[in-house]
Amino acid sequence: MSKRKFLTVLMIVSFHHGLAFSQQLPELVTKHGYADTILVNGKIVTMDDRSTVPNTPGHIFQAMAIKGDLIMALGSDEDVRKLANPNTRIINLGRKTVIPGLIGTHYHIFTRATDEYGPSQGLVDPSVRLTVVTEETAEATAKKIRDTIVNAIQVQRIPKGKWITVSLQENKDNRRATMNTWVYLGVLNKRQIDAATTDHPVFIKAGGAQSLFNSVAVEEFKNVFPDWEESTNLENRMGAARDGQGAVPEIQGLAFEIWWKEKPVENFAAAMRLKGLDLQELGITTVATRILFPKVIAAYHLLNREGKMPHRLAYYIESQRGNFLSLKSTRELYKGTGAPWTTHAAGNKMLWLNGMSQEVWDSTQNEVCLGPDVIASREIQRRERCPEPGTRPWEAVKAAIIYGWRPVQVHATSSHGARLYIQMLEEAMKEGNLSVDYMRNLRTTLEHNILLGTPPDVMAGIKKYGIILNVMPRFLNDVPENIKDYGEQLRTFAMPVRSWIDQGIRVTFEASGTDFWTPIYSLITRRIRLGQEEEVLLPDQSIDRVTALKMVTTWGSEYMLAEDTIGTLEPGKYADFAVLDKDFFTIPVEEIRDGIPVVMTGLDGEIVYDNLQ
Image 1 (tube, rainbow, N blue to C red):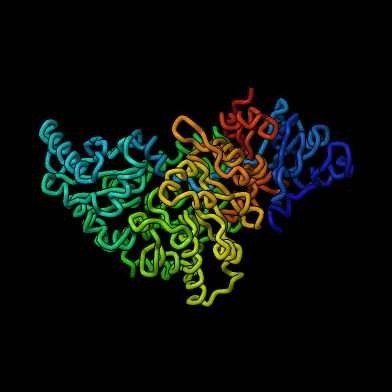
Image 2 (cartoon, rainbow, N blue to C red):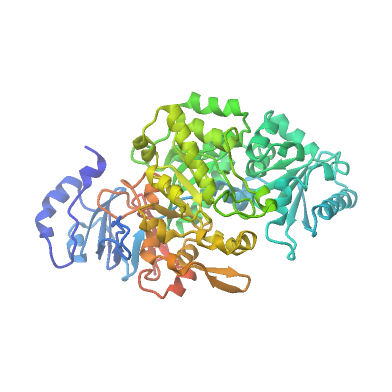
């Protein structure tokens, strides 16, 4: 008998009606012993209603009993107190609101951990850091970069072989993400800086998703990743390697696989744990992330073996990018490893491999993929990032599916990008002789979905294959710039969450880092920022606050195949919860945007954070 079935007990639906709790007491205590912890005098909102009906949070109770790592019972103060003995810890909530622990469906926690806590563990950036603000043209910007580097080498007497990092920042008079477009199209390239940087490897970071390397840096990469050129071309575009263009793997891989290659795994584990302790103070109990680098995976497994995991983690390997494999090696990776991914109930309770990932499909900002849905000028269409057969995103995910993997966290931000993803799924089905039911049970996901819209054929494909749409509300702020490119016809494509939910599509959302409240506010109000002003974007697509919370609790658990274990407060599930300083369900909407402090967090039955006054 499963642990959950063993501990399933009567839930009291009402404080004043229902079966007599006292009649169940002897059997309950006899089977399980007295509760270890009891929460009383609270508003415990279970979020156990999985429907899409607005404002349906499920049951509300005064008290909750915990035994071991599981929820034992919920009910009135009077009834739940009967489960206590002198050794039971009783916590008076002071009428505060309790919700399930928050679930971060898409959080790159390992990079945040090393950014914030890496230096204290010896994980430091050894490069000389410079900053350059872009000019109006790529050529003028390239000259400015060259001049800045040459001047720094002379003034600072930078020794040969020393890495130089240039942080490229957008000129306020330029269109948003202009520098990203220059790098992506190759008009800003390594040939413009090579002659002045023959003795130093140079890394130019243009925002969070684009980078540029000079020839010396490229050779450093190829010493570690022999397939770098093929990998880069297939990831971005043909000719990207010749231009020195990098992407997310290079930005992060430079540190993890070159600068920190010799660092002990314990250093990485310490940084990951310290960041995880921060999450506990925010009521975040579960995180899902793709992981590119073996040392990061090793660090989390070390924490798990030692019983030091500060949160639950569902991870998706993306080693076909992190190790810069050739296309042949990528296919063999998935063929050789079979399908080791699992659901939470079948995996480890704190750490489970939940599938594979390919972060870049299409992209955000200037590199969206609208294809035939919204026609733009040839110049704009030229920078659209639309994968096709033979490219790394297409072939990596397709091979993974054929050989039994679950694909998750694929970035299909736009309508035609999603259409192409569906086409790839159908190719994989045919080649792998897979059924529609099999594909639906994978619960593959698409991320961000800023300009997905509701094209009938795309919606039909998403529903047919049970694809979960994981949105990033923060990216709605980019839409006005996209409208300038594509015209007002694009407006209706801007994350129509209400329409998707009404069509029966499961929708979740990713927090802005560790901030869950601002995205909820955005989903409720549809307000976006335009400099110092605000605009309401598609107000008919707003949703209620309970539905928004379901997206990171009730439905969020479905994203990582963990709805049987977490995401709601029910007997037999893990006791993961957050105690809020304000009542999320009744406070004015404007107060949600300000953030709701968490005063207590429960994880796996333990109180891991306590600031309850």
